[in-house]
Length: 455
Image (cartoon, rainbow, N blue to C red; front, top):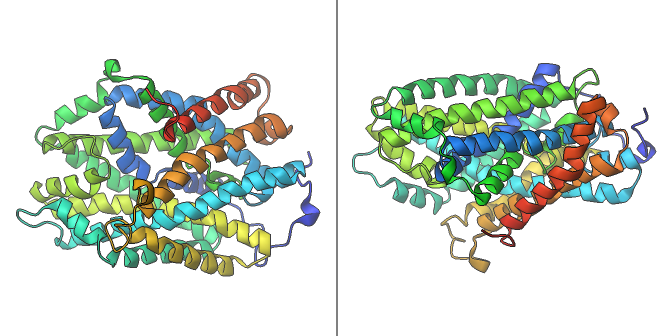
């Protein structure tokens, strides 16, 4: 099988020696990428808004029919091309048009990093405030505390911390940086998650939250719920922004991509499930609303921790959990443009990590200052700079990037099945999902997200 078409035009990367993930390291890194802030605050929010367990079951179905097939496609393209999210498309077809389409994923990841680092910075700030006890004060208005924090310049400082940490990990390489980072943080993430789950399940009145999460009410599901579940299944796996494709390029040929896909999907589901058992019992125990979105994490839950015995510790663990989820995802997002710069311009990994990190930080400052800060009043089209970057990347570029992956794997690249290790029934099923089901579903999610489809 020849997967190096066009490789004569590929610049050599300085300082790279064909670094590869180990089998377990790759799965942990991929889970670290997929288990981001979306699992810890967006998933509980949309689940709470759309009826609890019924929505969770719908989410599982969407993950199976769209999320996992596209995840396998991204990793297959990455390993087949052995390059960045743009060059891999070109190498596998020798057609520049596909390289241009692939570059959209690189650009998307770069833009996402400019505002994702801001949100990740919030989690670090709240972790410090919680463990020190400064966050919890008698009669405090936690909404006002968040607004005051966001309106200042501290978000820029914490954004810089996230960028520096992410860039440092990436500069250390694939096995020495990204893999080691995830091997430490992901098991720690699980331990903290289990501790918080035990604490939340032992709270007075927690049973109501458990019932809300685990007893399905299908009467609350509708077409809108289906599209939201589908969109979250897609986005929760970090698809459409080149992360899994880039990580796939570091996977050894002996690694079964099918097995890895199932492991990553299972890990994503387990973390989402346990997160639900952390959030909902706490929410119901303290009379909070389960569908409050961002405010649930930074405004509502601090009020619950303030009333909880040893609340500063458990609140600190919760925000540390958010911080770990944010940082592991931030590393995978930043790696996408760094890998591109290394292949495109022949930079060393260290040089690419520094220059891309600095650029992301500088361009991200307006995002940090637009959430109630000095740029908060600048709202073209009714959206802040932060909201616009979030909207364009999550609701426009990522669906298009995912669509490109499905069409490329389903129609343009004829050796996808061989690289993925699939044949017979499983290959035909995968191709049907990629050629027919996934494109239709992604287009519907896109139309709904941009307001062209409503219910």
